[in-house]
Amino acid sequence: MANAIRVAVDVGSQFHQVAIGDESGRLLDEFLIDHRRDGFEHFFSRISLHQATDVRVAMEGYNGWARPLDQQVLTRGWRLFNVNNLKLARYKEIFPAPAKTDAIDARRILELFSFDGHRSLARNALQEIVVAAPAQRELKYLTRRRRYLVAERATRLTRLRCDLQSICPDLLALTGAADNRWFLRFLTCRDRLTALPGLHTKTVAGIRGIGVKKLPPILAWQKTAAFGANIDLADEDIVADARAILALDDIIKSLNSRIESAAADCPMTQRLRSIPGFGSTGTAELAGEIGTLRRFGGEASLAVYLGMAPLDCSSGLSRRGAPPKCVNSRCQMAMMTCVARHMQCVPESRAYYDRKRAQGKRHNQAIRALGRHLTRVIWKMLAGDRDYVCKTEKT
Picture (cartoon, rainbow, N blue to C red):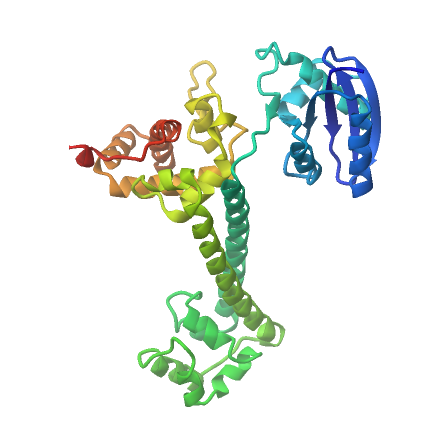
């Protein structure tokens, strides 16, 4: 029996190929499991046969197709590593196999464990998963769900605006923005759009949000209401989209309350909120995605993860930057928003941004440059358990 074993899992949507080896890389066992409860039980029973005290598991797609197997591995106290698919692909190009099968891929993942003492050969090929605090795991789930719903709302709103523009532009002209809640309530007070011109004045006035200023234009539109040729196709669909937007607004509002509640129990979120311009949603998203500083080797790797450190990509006389492939896109969007708002609150940051713009950098480039500087500040804040302090507050 080996005291220490290494487990490699080639993850699939329905089946996972598993390879078990010792510290030297010698293959001890390999088998296939289903992505079901019985398959997971078989996975742990086969590993338990080796009676090892040091078990390290590497698998592709942590928090992807590997769920919930990855969480069960962490629950058992084993060390879990996420496979960098780009590094694995490069490794397989340098040391090609005679064929391409799931079993061969699992053995190749197993070979990556042998680089543990030679980091320069395959740096970050295997990245150990460090479990974040419960509050941050909750924030990660909530903020990701919120982002999905906000994107869905934006898609439906765009479709609603386009349909109204083509079917009844005069109705759309009643409001400055199609997502005004009084306007959405007006659209949804009946099941069909063509029923709106026949509403009684008392019914229209009773719709919440329609006051004395909005009522006359609506009544005037009712007298001259006209619809396009495709109204028979989009009559009910426009109302359905408006109702979906109202429902999404309520869900997003509820999520915001849950995010605020979880953020109150998260020290990292509270630290980040001390930075001027860093709002509640942005800081919650950053804290949830960052998790813990132990995941990063230093502030430079954190800056890459946040998308605030484009890599040099030069050749000959060409000098340009390229975005790294390991950027967390959610972190980058949240950080860009927070930095842009921070710049409006702190004169020194605004002066730094203006200086970068004067050097010929575009808006996003100047924001990233300021974000790179703020990443150093954030690292020191989180590492030293300190809040952000402006120069005026110091004096």
